[in-house]
Amino acid sequence: VKSYDAVIVGGGIIGGSIAFELAQHGLRVALLDRQQPGLEASWAAAGMLVPGPESPESAALVPLARESFALYPAYVAAVEEASGKTVEFRIGATLHVFGGVHAEQTPEAIPALLAQHGVPAKALTPEEARRLEPGLNPNAKSVLLLREEGRVDARSLTAAVLSAASQKGVEILAETSVEALVIEKKHCVGVTAHGEKMPAGRVVLAAGCYCETIAGAEGYAPTRPVRGQMIALRPAEGRIRHVLRGEHGYLVPREDGRVLAGSTSEDAGFEKRVTPGGLQQILRAAVELVPRLESAAVVETWSGLRPDTPDHLPILGPTDIDGLLVATGHYRNGILLAPVTAKLVGEWMREEEPSLDARAFNPLRFLQKKMQAGG
Ligand code: GLY
Image 1 (cartoon, helix red, strand yellow):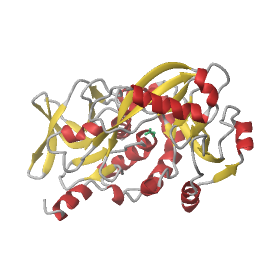
Image 2 (cartoon, rainbow, N blue to C red; image 1 turned 135 degrees about the horizontal axis):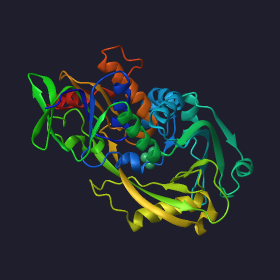
Image 3 (cartoon, rainbow, N blue to C red; image 1 turned 90 degrees about the horizontal axis):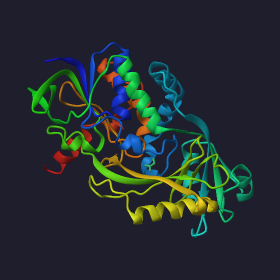
Image 4 (cartoon, rainbow, N blue to C red; image 1 turned 135 degrees about the vertical axis):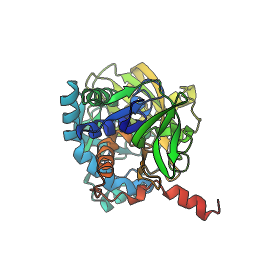
């Protein structure tokens, strides 16, 4: 039986980025996926890179998100170099649109929240915004220009990350569903898959919403799937140049002219069906943002399962079981947070002081809550 310095459970962008990072530091790494890697939440993501807070609840994420955004250009360059693949990655302004035709009032909370976190945002009149993005709904009440955002093609990035990891010697084991952690005297010494033990110096849980299905992981990684449906559109005329976010949905342009429209947030278990109700909601929001999309071609529909957590924040760090680390629960931000997550896990593995305060994401926080509740 082969032994690894690290076994990473979950072959999405998070697991792949961690594997790539660890292999670059000379570790023998195996990356395990329950099916073919890279085909779950990372494959479904729109690839918006939003370092600022989207809501007051997500404000705790800002330092982590900002650091990851800053790491992105070097991360993509390293992945491209190691994989020999190119990835569509752009830094550019987003237009946050308030008060579409159906909206009653402009929420003041978002500009205030952005100001509080020092996110540069410029208020534009609808006319100014339409000079930047001529297709925008003329009924938009106000628009914020957020210069420091970005977008990336999540599918090609994830494929390139996996290929970069493989080039650096990571062993990628597909169709390898992990059933349990192997824990001996408060020390995690490996995992079991297909009923067989796979020994490892360290185990990193990065299996997104599937973490909770792994025996021994429940208390540390209580993730839950939140379905997001998506639609790819090809406009009949005119290109969309900016990421557009509205109150009911978002549009993310691609260099090939397609526009990704999202998304729903549904509690549907592990069911990945695309539904008429979901598509209707996304299309309504898309057409509200850019009315001429009414005549676009629908070229693809799909859905993915975001790994949500009880407090909607990621779960990152070592645990009270020696050798067990968690890096999951990135919910709506897995693509953005991949570089910083990989960096932090590398630091924890080498037992260095983490370069960022990650205490808010401590995997023990749910265990403590359970105990306080008398469980
Ligand atoms: N980050 C976009 C979404 O979760 O739909």
